Image (cartoon, rainbow, N blue to C red; front, side, top):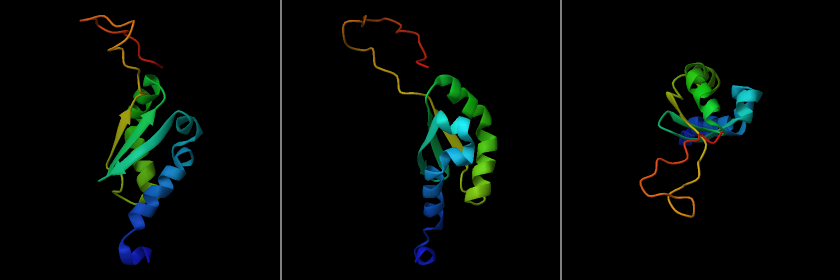
Length: 106
């Protein structure tokens, strides 16, 4: 059934999401998670900007490691995103034309 419908890549990618920490290592897996995958582009969210920088440096090695497990050419590029930051546009602490809090939240 999987072969008939061409679901091999979809199953391997779903397996990657479930085994993320195993594939990338315990330490990296503890500070990041795979968010989405489409057309060879894997989006990864980290819990701090420092880990986002680290994962950007590790991206080529991660692409090779993931393709070894998922099949050659499955992951083409990894986009690394930092943590979600709160909005300071409205509320008691907002200032018109202000430069913002200047913090990286992590």
